[in-house]
Image (cartoon, rainbow, N blue to C red; front, side, top):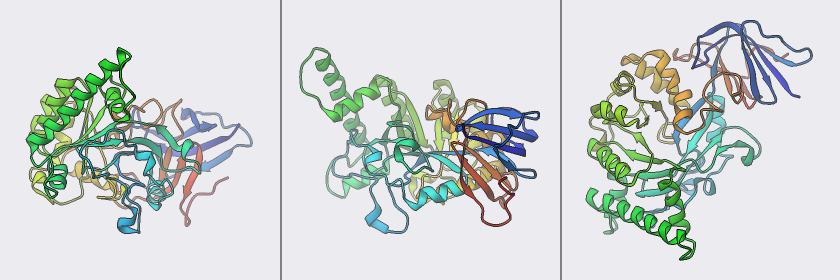
Length: 389
C-alpha cells in the first residue's frame, strides 16, 4: 500500500470548512482522511506543509489541451476537422497529444484535470474527454471518455463555411443544420430499434446525446445564440452545458430555472469580436446570486490553462465571493462534467489531486510548491520547497 501524508497545511476543501494546520491522509491515490487529528502511519511519506495552503487540484472545464500543441504552430493544430459542419462522431482523444508541453505546464501550475474538447469551427465538432494532466500512460489519465459532444453557435462556424460559400452562412442555417442532424438521429434510432439499417457512427453519437448518456457542450456567446441553444435543448430533450456565455447574465434567472450550468471564460481576454461586446466580469456574481451552477475555464490555448486563478481573481474584484470563485475552479466544473464523485474537493473517497501553494490562491503572487495527482507528487518547485520526508 502506498501512503502519503500532507501535514500542517491550511486545507481549503472547497466543500467544507477550512482546516487550519490540518492533515490529509492518502492511500493508494485516494484521500482517506482530512482533519485536525489524523493518525499518521509509521514509515509513510510525509510532506511537511506547515505554512502552505492545500487546495483541490483545479479542473479546467473547457480546454483544447493537446489539440493545439505548444510551440509548433499550425503543425500542431488538430482541434477542427473543418470539412463538414456536423461531425459528432469525431473524438478528441484521437487528436490529442497527451505529452504536449501544455499538460506539464498546467500540472505545474495547479490544474490537475481538464475537459479537452474539439474547437468551434463546426456546428457539431465531436466528442470530448476529461483527463488528468499527469501520468505516463494515457489510459491511466482518462477520467471520462466520452464526456460530451461539442456544439458551436454564432460567428465561428458561420465564418468558416461562409468563406467557402457553403452552408451555414447564417444563424438560421446553423440552427437548421443542427435540427436536421438531430432529426436524422431520431429516425436512425427508430430504424435500429426495428432491426433495420446498418450502423452509422455519426448517428450513434447523436443517439447517445438524445438518450441522455452525454450532454451537449455548446459554444455560445451572444444572447440570441444562447436562446437558440435553449430552444434546441428543449425541442430535442438533450442536456445542455452552456459554454463561454458572454451574455449569460442577461438571462440568469432563466438559466437557474432550467438548471442549465454555464462554463465561463476565458475571463482575461479583451472583447476581440462583436459577440463579446456585452461581456462583463460581473457575470460571475450575477450567476452566483441567481443560483446558477457555473465554472471558470481557460479555453486553452486562447489563454493558458494556468491563468484560471487570474480570471477568478478578476471575478472576485467584480464582486464574486472568494468561496464561490474557488468552487468555480474545483467542485463546480467537476460536477458539471459529471465527475464530481472523484474530483473537485479534498474529501475522503476522492482522488488525491491536491495542490500546495505558498499563499492563498487569490493572492496574485501565489506559487505552486507541490502538485499531487492521484496520490503521486507530479510537480515540486525546485527552490525553497519544504522537504519531502
